Length: 398
Image (cartoon, rainbow, N blue to C red):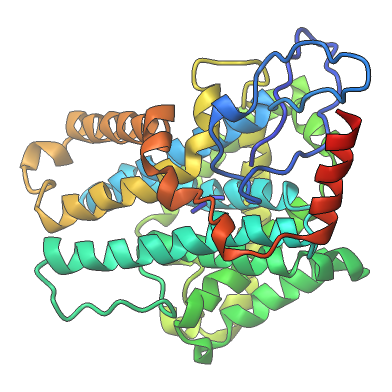
């Protein structure tokens, strides 16, 4: 679901909007966790000989927060979809763009990634280590909460939300390759289409999702700040309203006629009971629909600093931690009361999901779980010669 970007904060007013600043890399090397205290919102003017301090861009923090709220809402609706066509329609619309939006932003903030030792260290500590920690934690939680002692702990078969960390790790490592090829987006789409008709890929490292979601990451790598300016135009915001309305109407029609499993991108067409060619058709159709809805979503993301902007730095915390409550609600029968399957109950579930994931993105929660999400681990790595040289230069300049 989903990196799963930290950027400078930009304050933009009225219709005279300055271009978005270039992407800034996070402390962890991934577009997700970093404490807002680590980057001041309004740095003091630099003195002579100092570089301006990097700021966070409120637009991307707002987008990440809103996307993770939609992820949590989607998970809360899943148990309601069997008995409610409306819930199923909302579920399908949200699932068509919330992870693509998250992945696209992750790709955008991966543009500067290379094999430099410090960036590889941040990739390990910010993605690989949290994957190991939460894969083990989720597996132990299932053994206990679901009374399933036979459930295996396997780092090769990600369970539940940890697939995104595996995917982000693989996508990031392949970033230099995508920057080198001539036609990265068509190649990524071709790979995604081929994966959708290849049932033999299996479950190892959740490669179906890694390959089928790959085009959105590569799109993000190919974007520039001015592309985000385009979706912020007034006419795009206006047009996005009927587009979302049409998407909801179509989803309401399609709900009893198709399975929402297509939006998970975790199975081939054959595994979903469809002919092989349907995988290719659905790959391109869903990609087009997802990109249109991602653009509509981004068009309505506020660019100014909001009350929830600071929570954008903690979206990976909210993403991984809310999974325990989502699965726990299923294991412990929280959805059994009949009133939850009525309209007011569905609204209640939606509000609770939004509030819970919001709390899980807050700075106190980030500080509490930073040991697992952003471990320092200096003891595990050699000191890079270039890094040591930079430190000596700074010491001499000081």
